Length: 390
Image (cartoon, rainbow, N blue to C red; front, side, top):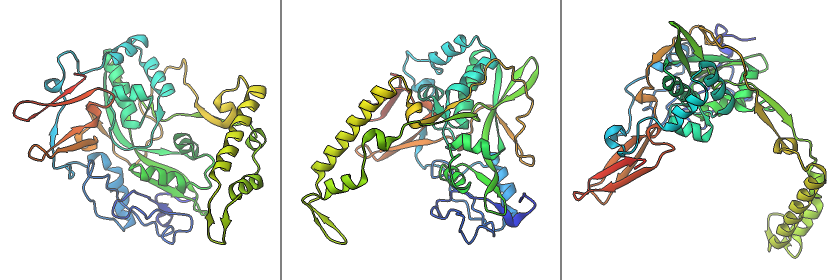
């Protein structure tokens, strides 16, 4: 098994816009060499960072990701949607957050359990949604789930902050995070993360299967009775269910019959088909749908969607006191950084331009209005007036 010290086997795969189509695969000639890419997360997050080809230069730069600041951002004027831009009948924090905190009895463990058990993980980097947006969508990345939990904690009277660092995931943890338990090799999971602009590195074994994956991550620290404890609501365990329905039997699907119906009346050559019989194909699909519906009604009437096609469910954490000073799966050599709020460098921007009025360009942090009504009007001087929930 390889490790950080066995550098020729240490694989780091990063999403790099300059080399976006270069991803490590099992047959990649650069795999054993461990070629490294440091990511650029798009114009809304970072400017161009040069490619790093020396393996020994990678770990510190990647693990120090929370310290990346002052990157090239949009040249637009950034408009902050704070009280001055809010409608007079709104408050900075949505009432639904306060109501949920009250429903959870302002209890730290219940708040953690709720976010853990009810908000799905989405592999993206940085803050894109407001806490209300995460609550509405019931999904979010580590930044957004941590922000939701912190908002609930602060509404309950606790002092909480973000912790930015790197965590080390086992195969099972990555499978649960991405739903890749059926993937033929681990590189598929790493590619998903790198395509999602998440800082990711992995250790591979002699078969080029990744043993563990290190990712950039954000979690929560809260002070309880004078002691700091950490919570990570976005790393979850899942129960998987295999669908019990034989779709070929249930639909009456037959490949030969479908092809024959499509080719009826058509002219075929070795390279083309003319006058494809779309009416026959539509009729076949309609029959398949009717057969499937009748089969479910007669044999699986009370079944859930997961019973029929398979799926997965979060295994809830219920009734446990969670009091841990460390997560237990942080990357040992990786530094961490505490944030009172998410730095602007790690917040997504929405930029738009008004061409009829002097080509003014404005940018907004998406986590300030996601999930809320966003209104744009103009005054007599054609200056934009922006309101949230107004």
